[in-house]
Image (cartoon, rainbow, N blue to C red; front, side, top):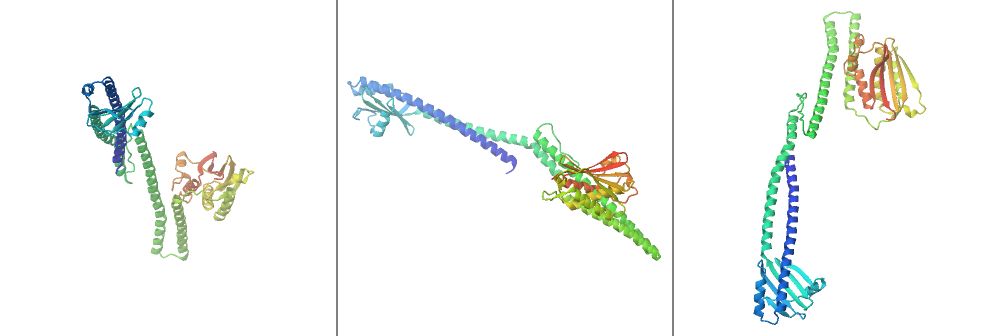
Length: 457
């Protein structure tokens, strides 16, 4: 069952329940009112019969019967009357053929009420029993109120017609209402179905009304924007990766073909092989960087990472970097040394953090004018800041905006080997640790890369 049909069925069902309850309430109230009215008229007839019977007890029976029929209410049919004395002997009955026995329980019901009267229904027949204490007489009277039965029948027909008509109108209105309400969603659904990776730049139309539907459209457009950016980033990444891979491979192929076409001396062959080795090392570094980027796209931050001291991670990283980079000068210092070591603790993956810090140190060293890097730890207000400072050319605003984009290299990278992937890797690792990574300059010719983490998290 689709959404439109379910909404229509539910709406119609609830309205049907309301109509049934309303109709039943109207019928019950009218039924009670009509039976009360019938009883009052039947009671009036019984009193008239009783008055006549008292007045005419000494006269002829036929005179009483004639008078009783003259006073009979024309709306009643099959009216029956029986009068008993205190010994429960029948003093009078009309019609003469009626036979009834005064039940003991009925007598108890009559005598237990303050007005000495009792009413009950027997099918469609209204029945009443009275006790007249001044003459010690019991009166039983019953009749069918044809007028009220006819009215109740007409009321049933009217209520049934109203219910059927109301249900039909409700069904039609609910179909129109649900169609009108869901039409924007249907339009959105159609537009969503047409959306593929080939037309991610298209956006859903956002109307003026129906704020909820507009919000859905806005959220979907925002999702398309994120997907489009992800696809564009992926395309750019693949394009730059293929370009970076093609360049060293083409260079290696060119050197190999040149060496094969010529008869080279031993020293010349050695020179070619050393050049090929250098290109191969660069190719391996590029491949490793690409693998790291692809892996970090899939890694999710884990709450199960252990707590570690960030200064110890930095000491280990600096030591390993000095062994890897000959002549690198790295100085680690503290803005202030916290009394509590917990202020230097973060939850993290030690291997990933070492890769990030190593890339930052290497980047600062490569682009520094004096080949010196200053690493500063500043722990304050439940935050841990690590600054990587070097002296060199300041980046422009446009370069700062693209700094974390894979394969981007600034104007100061002309004489420095690299692929522009180091800071992209740093950004992903710091993000995995719920930290932040920013570039700034603190004074002329001093660059600063800042990483920040929440202590204990």
